[in-house]
Image (cartoon, rainbow, N blue to C red; front, side):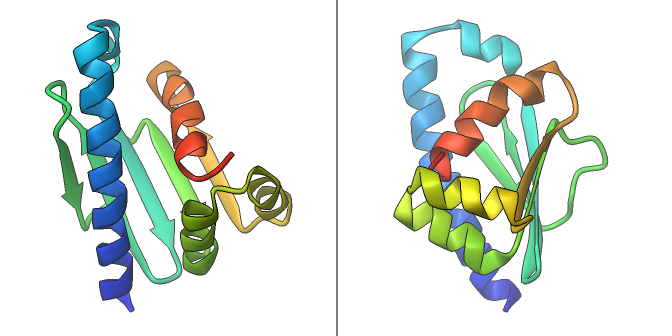
Length: 121
C-alpha cells in the first residue's frame, strides 16, 4: 500500500518540479519563497516534498519536523482529486473532512493556493 503512495508522490513531484522550474524561468521572485517543505499524510503512506531554490524537488519518506504546509487526506480522495481536477469535488472533499491543507507560515500561505490548484481547486 505504501508503494502506491510513493508511486503517486513521484507523479506529484514531477508535476510540481516542472511547474516550479517554469515559474522560476519567468520570475526571480519565486526564489525568495524557497526552499518550501510540504508534508503529505495519508492512510496509505506519508511523505515530504522539499522544493529547493533551483526548482528541484526532494521526495522524502519521513515527514519534516518543520513544514511550511501539510496536506492530510484519504489516499483515494487525494488521487481522485489530482486526476479529476474538479473544483466542486475538491470543495466537497474539504467540507467532508477527506482532505485538509494547513499552512504554518507566510511561505506556506503563499504556496497553499498552488497546492490547491494542483489538486483541482
